[in-house]
Length: 74
Image (tube, rainbow, N blue to C red):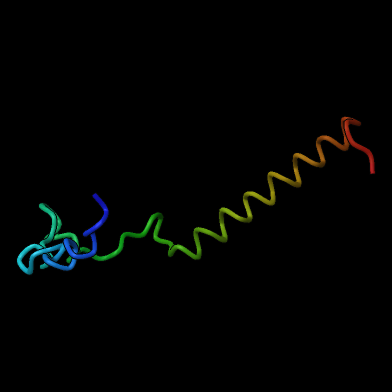
């Protein structure tokens, strides 16, 4: 079974030249023409900064609440 495996592989190409050419998927022709959308008019970096600041605020408020309720001590 594996005796002449290398010979079989080298005898015919894995892909034919016709199959190797790129063919775009259906419905993607117009996808490259769109400009990038902005959510709330912000870039990706601006959205990241806002989300990171919101994350830090929630962490600080949560830790403060636990400290006030006596669940943690410093």
